[in-house]
Amino acid sequence: MQGSIDARSSKPPVKEDEVDRDKRHESTEKQKSAKDLKKKEEKKKNLERQELETRRVKSRQRGEPEEDSPNENDGDEGDDDSDDSEGMASRLDRILDDPPRADT
Image 1: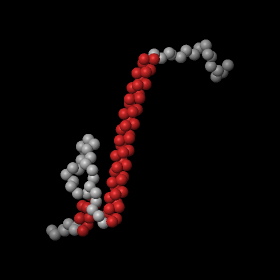
Image 2: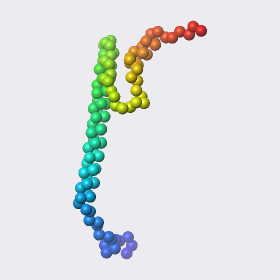
Image 3: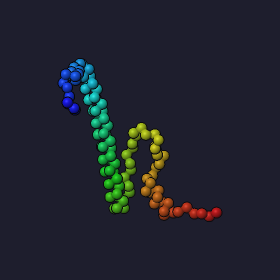
Image 4: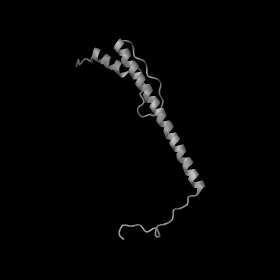
């Protein structure tokens, strides 16, 4: 008998303790809900950014001033440009309109 399973040699299933199973299930549900909440917040933030960028593009096309970015503080201290008072596009426009002179 090659490849057959002998039911007499297999171990019976381990009966789980209901209390432990419920605790693990509850813990997993908490972790899942926290993860889902974080994803929902990220999605909302990304949608807001896309809407802002869409409004900026339309205002640029109409020649109106750009809308300022909302004040965001998501704890990322590494790439904080809080001293940046004007947008990148306006700085590039200013540089292109008035290039620095090399009078050396």
